[in-house]
Length: 406
Image 1 (cartoon, rainbow, N blue to C red):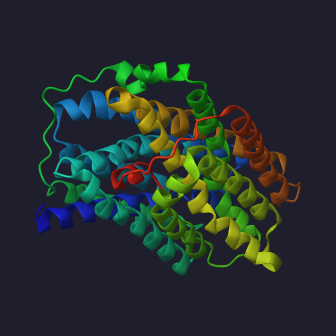
Image 2 (cartoon, helix red, strand yellow; image 1 turned 60 degrees about the horizontal axis):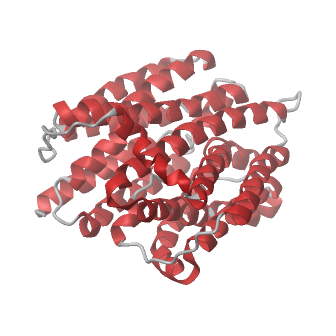
């Protein structure tokens, strides 16, 4: 790959996740403090992203991939998204906020697949070249959350303004990316996008249990994305966004440990470790406060174990289980079920739970809130331990370690 191409793709990936990281983790705090939103309205706002994730594969697979150059679609979507973000910065009604954030997420969600596609199509050896470019996304997330934390505007409309300006920059920059023409021979069907070809995998009980566990564990995952920031803030932690970025740093570290852990533990034990980590982190979130801030740091740093050892390991397990013929369908099915169905349910439920444990004076009973996802994760662990039997050990390749989002 030419150096200029590598630099352009790296900058693209950096801007992509800079746009996302500017608002996603901080949106709940903004809604609660600036718009006086209810917990249900916060949950709905995060559920909008899940709805968009369900729509995005159809847009990319049946329209963008077949008729338009990917870099041009990426540019147009980012410029449209910047326009919607401007409307969000002018909005003061928590009720209408849902429709605006849904409109924005519909423009943003397809860009996650488009940036990967643009990068992959410029590579002769993606398994070797892609990780070094994709890691710029994680770096961007760390950088932007530290900017937000350093200047202390995590609860201000500035998070959307920062995302808007970044989206404009990426939108313009996209038109200067390497040409990625449409796949003229592509004939992606609805069944392929939905991953229906992968339904045959459910004949294997262990895969069916893994699939169910993946959907269910995304419910607690949604609690983390939606509620961690305001919970830490209420707990008395200072510079929350800066400290939460340690979670992304731990993700990089544990990502590198996956090959060793896979060969030593096997898939079942790794998935169990991931589930246990989810339970521990939610308990730490519940009991931690300014007087026991070390518990909150444990909760943050467990992000790498929670995400990598369950979700990334699960993607590798799915890849190995499906084989070459239905590999794409299997990953598509997992993505739709987890980030669409699982996180959609979790986002809605997290808002309902927050309202349940909001006291008359407006303060939150965060211990009770966090015990709910801890209980769900514990139930998933019991189901998984009792019914999942596959424990094959195979070392993943480098390319298999970069399939999931942050």
